[in-house]
Image 1: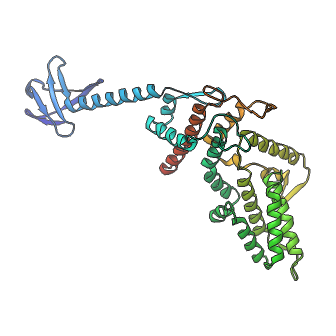
Image 2: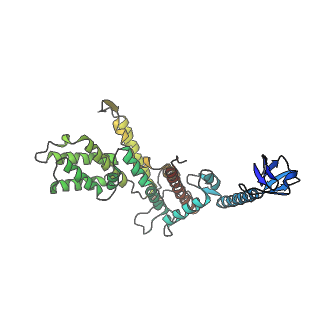
Image 3: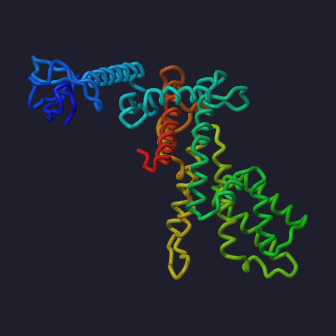
Length: 373
């Protein structure tokens, strides 16, 4: 129902097209040439159509059409996007998944800023006075997902988040270890400080995983307790606090081992974890916890922090690793580079921008209470 010049007339909506909405009245002749309604805009009688058209609806439809044309122009302008490992995506596919052209352009801008103008194509070279595209790509991808991985690790290990963040700081783990020993009654001394410092320095340079390094720190903590006068020894440590400090120590070393300068280093790190997981899988020792017997219990902890990174970062690094040759060349070069090469600047920028778009979608999903695509 709406009110027009002829009074109150019943209205039936009988059609909808691209540029107009039509209504028919039961008494068209009595309605006059023009009819005004206040809830949906101005209605004008069109005799050829034997009905009314909504002028405001036409304007809205025209505006939507202009917006569609503008979006189509932007998507066409961006076009296809070259990724690593011979993969491609497109602006249309990204838009379909919720990444608008403006989102993509901003992500590309941020990626270009991370690469800068003083990096060069090619593998990282020892002693060089520049940072290669490869090095900046690896570092930027690792930095991009670190905070999310730390938060996930804290939830996974049931750690309080402030302690997890402290473990990632340069001197944070030493402060946490000293706090642990204090709670356990092993008073701090110059000797215990030296043991902790020497152990951390020694294991940080070892070619073992974060899990293996943590076991060495655990042994050092037991030695400190065993040598403390009046202390019952490491076997008397509180089980809950011990589990927490070992998880924090493993997080500390997991962050350190991701200070990578090349994809080859990343490949070697993942190979170390694969070998250690294979050994852990064949370990027949069983751990009894809360009445449950757990076989190969080490497998739960023998995993790189990258496993907790957002999918957008992990998939980008996986494509980068897939682009590497099986073995490095004798001259040290690890991949073809330069414009149009497997590791061209364009592909690396696109990969980094794509990872940033994935992070953006995660933030939006968290804000809206939905699940990221």
